[in-house]
Image (cartoon, rainbow, N blue to C red; front, side, top):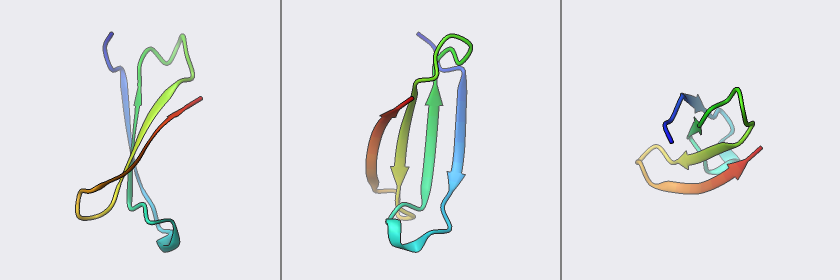
Length: 52
């Protein structure tokens, strides 16, 4: 298994507690599954979610 795509997103919504979201996709041509890791600006992991 190899990561094919990494997306980096910056949140402008202050109330959600998430400042940076990193999406990891493995074989996007075969699956819509995403591992999303949310961070605060100090680098603390806020949440890890498996999405589709």
